[in-house]
Length: 252
Image 1 (cartoon, one colour):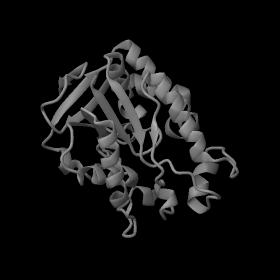
Image 2 (spheres, helix red, strand yellow):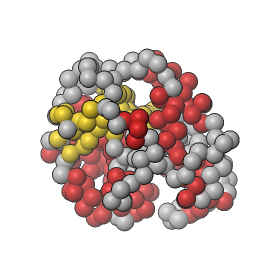
Image 3 (tube, one colour):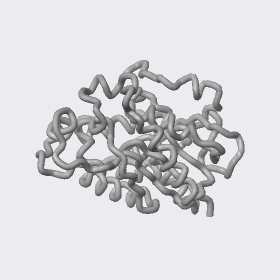
């Protein structure tokens, strides 16, 4: 049984960007593991970190990341994949980034998260022994996505990788920021056309992140509208031409 390992910076990125492929792989008999890198709870968050919680209608006493980890478990079940893996590293607002613009700027000089993530990802790969990795291209430029890519690229050797296009950052602007575009420019473009069941599972998984849907899409109706515009297609860059056959994958 082949194994696919999706490396998600945040609790929702993999489902939003490649949830349909994850569901398709599981349906085809793959073992599929969705691992999120930045899920650590922080007691008594303050400042911008607390604001990120309050602006979603969640009071200060709620363990925001615990709630999101529960949503991730529900999303994995909707996709029909293995229970998710949650690494304990902290999101950018808990690493000194103090505003929304800072999240989409250059990494702080004192942000050593990529160096911390590299060994943890290597250990995860050693345990799961994936035949295929899935990871972000960091489209949109969120610093956590950029640092996740840097951490993964610091490792060698690696299994074949499908680098996903970071949805919904891909549709928020006509020309979204792509700070790492040069890393992927020479890689072959690949598309996956999702069967109706995979589309339904992806939609259910995305909707499971109830704390994020309003912020990301303006509500469930907005989520459905955005997904409809994708027309059941997910897009990737592929780091190696060889590897196990992937259902629905076509050259772009």
